[in-house]
Length: 171
Image (tube, rainbow, N blue to C red; front, side):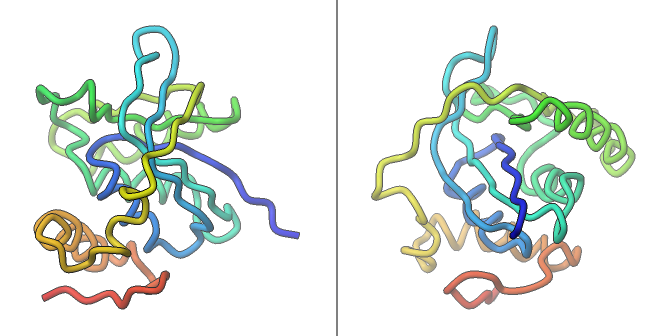
């Protein structure tokens, strides 16, 4: 029996984040919606819950994908809506995520602003927004924002297969 783990990610539009992780080998399921942590981060922010097989892909690899597909070093005016975060479900994930961010910092010129926060609550997006890229791969938003992210991952060999029911093609 497979032992899946869950981790949450927030950083940019959840349509993009969902599509990115749906194309990663070792990812079993991606739920798109809004995530809340605690304290100053108790308000909901767009994000995804990723269920993955740690025997296929590591938490560090998932975090690298996340950092490379949103503005992980930029504190812009929409950060409350698009909080840059890794949301842990298990206490040991907290230390692993913090270590991964420190390890990956060497590949970024500016400091990574991504927070490591406890997952407290999740509210799914409405049905019409879920699986947005799979339902609308040629929509202008997808062509402008999602396809370039997937191309970037493919270029860096972070996508090892074309998982999902949509062929991966970048023009």
